[in-house]
Image (cartoon, rainbow, N blue to C red; front, side, top):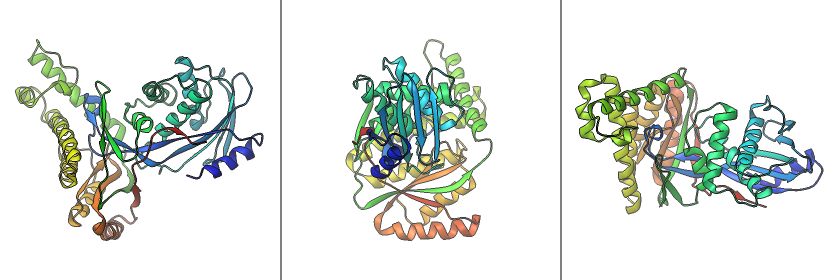
Length: 386
């Protein structure tokens, strides 16, 4: 994203003066799917694509003059009014309200912003917006007194309260805390996290976007979550002296003990979650050792579990995963909730061109469209640019 382009739009659409420029990235998740609401671990990293916003205090009590560069849409609104109708403006309105709750005395400001996070690729452009705006407000009005974690929670609260998405904390966490050359293992229960070096020399990280999103994804997601809750309830009944809040509190012996008390489907879902917990910890060890071949094997195992046990894959994603295997790709799996979207692939550089060409050719032959290709570079989190 070009800072000078954003600045030129800011100057054009407002009073000709420049402001302060902030940036926040989108994210990928290397491993750890459907573990967040089960109290488990995730393994995200910030990427080198995201949102850039220029902001300047405009001297009004609470009037926001906002311009979405990508949508070519200008909107003025007041924080004392109801939330705007335009969905993109709700992110600004919501983060202002949430930062106010944290003691930031937000007043009127001008803002122009743009992004280069691919839409629909599961790289969390919305979290990048929230984190960027929160960082800017904290700098302009809050003397940078709001902690990074509170900015993460303000972004999540914006989704919950003003956008209507009941999301977890991974996306905003990765956007705020990202660090170039590192991915992060986040414990979604305790919020503790650790940086792990990610510098796979001789490998490339690439997303292949299936360009499909199947119907019923949201209801199917809720069904998976309910399955996990059913198993937790069965565990609590079986072991009344122990505390079971999520599947994070269970081990393999516990799950075996309630196998006959739950449906086959619920058991399969829980079996995947416990397996994924083990894989995330093994992935941590592999990165520490610089063993990217083992990391890739674990990615394939996650895809297999998501496809066969959690059943959130689809024909197109399984097809891309099989193409990866056939081309000797080190690791490949679904990234995100499933039912469409991307595969994330760890591939040796000398196999990269062959893999991409073969994937494009075979996917087009089978489905009549070419998958989008996004090379991934791990980048820094929220920051001030100018």
